[in-house]
Amino acid sequence: MFSPTPIGSWSSLPVEMKLSIIDHLDLDDVRTLAKLNRESYSLSVPSLFHTVHIASAEALLQYTACVPKSYLRHIRQLTISTKRAFKPAPGSDPIRVSDALIDILPHCTQLEQLTLSLAASLARTVIPCFEHLHSLKSLCIDHCGDEARSPLSERLVVSIAASVPNLRQLSLDRITRSAIHAPDLLGARPFVPVVKGDEDIPDHATLGRELRLPSLLRLPTLKKLRIRDTHLGDPQWETMPVYCSLEVLDLGSCYHESNDYNRVCTERIMGNIGHTVDECALNTALTSQTFAHAKHTEKPLKKLRKIHLTPLFPVENVVDTLTTLSDSPVESLSVQCHEDDVVDMCSALEDFLNLRAERGENGFYQHLHEINVSTVSDLGDALDIGVDAKKPSQETLSGEGADAVRRLKEYCRDLRLQGVVPVGESGTSPKETGDVAKPAPVQTRQAVRAANQA
Image 1 (cartoon, rainbow, N blue to C red):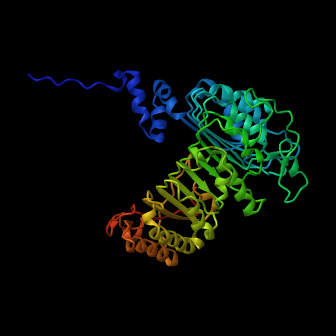
Image 2 (image 1 turned 90 degrees about the vertical axis):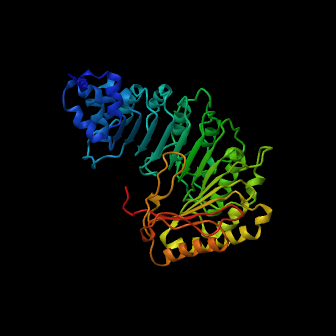
């Protein structure tokens, strides 16, 4: 008589197989499994603590008090905000954020990605904690506090970044210049905020006392650098020795300074490090002076394949800037703009494509095969590249904006280029239209972010 082979139960599976199965479960399912029994809970701990979000200073304090230190080694992605969850009562003691970080970070031995949203500066005693984070590859530091009352010093941030042994991706927002490195900004218009009293940040083993933003270029492992809403006027950006091979560069602008000032700062940085950059995001226009700042025998931006224009980029400078970058082997152009600017942006892109068609035989953007146009309702939805990039959600444009995108697509077809129907239009999926011919095909794609997207 045939006797069926019994199927093994969950309890009979080896631990490695159980962990592999749990690793593929949704987080809600893992939480349910963890409630079954003691063994299931122990097996679920690595998945439960793989990604941790701590939303406030109060939550951070509670986390340090309640979570066993042995669990912290399972954290791979950690996000910490030090903003207060509610307004503190008069006379109450401040939450010792630095002490809490010192209590947590040394135990996060497998941490790969760390995001710190800091309401105020940290104590210098937190810096040595980063020396032991050998698995940390991506670091984001965002100042979410009042820059005038509680600035976040460039000296502290640079020292922290330089202390991470294998840092590859670095993202900085609203970092304040130090009076030690920017004495010319003190009391001078346009009154850019400057940190005083950060002389106690100790010298770094590699960088010494030069804990200024340009010193980030001396970090040999760094591949992706993003700096937004930060003053980039340090002249040493142009002369600092470059020990890294940056592949992705995302430079914002300082809202205290003029467009021309921010443009010069960007050109100075690009001239020094642009010879290795594969992908860049621009908030300001570029001129031929970008190449005048070059400090290498290799031409700047000779490897540039992807260009992103942010919503802050001036529409009137689209053609001039793209012409400046025409010698680069650009394959993809991504453009973001406000909904009110989409008509003007599409018109500017039509002018660019017209120029490309006229110069096609001379190799003007001969490698370009994709143009993405997307709109944002809020600057918070703006595209980030390199570090924790977020993909825009796709919705349907209407009115003049939709007409402008449609004209741009039709213009590509008139030029015998390859086009794509905008995603979400009439419920259709992207498909090829028109004939394909040389020069390389161009795609247009429309995507709109919801204003209330988290």
